Image 1 (cartoon, rainbow, N blue to C red):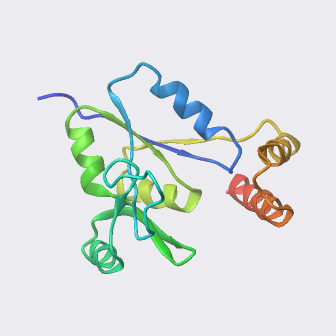
Image 2: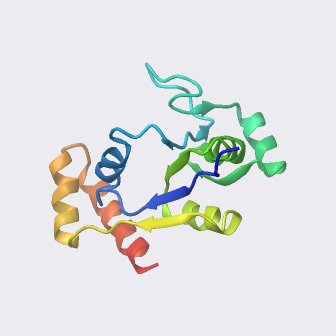
Length: 158
């Protein structure tokens, strides 16, 4: 039997560099997998069940909540998102390390349920650099940038 893999939680403000760090960690590593979240939102074009997300009905997701099948979950914009415990457990039991990229509140929930998890909180070099990165994407409205910066201040203070 192989040794159990690690569960590594990555959290941090939007624009802090989580995606860049994760891509670097995954490069050339066959023993690491990125956690797949469950959601009640509809698949976007090209998304596949079990690859991009586990797409579930609201009824199925609420059953998963009642049966405590999720390490963490939250509701955003009318849809549920969460981390299925069975996926994490099966990957770790196979000796694979699992990377979980989630927001701060979800990370706190996972750390309560999985005290052996390693938690990494990424911070940007400065708040000005974070703002520059968010603006540089060119995908956010001024209001969205303001909300993300406010959220970053709260998350960093935690």
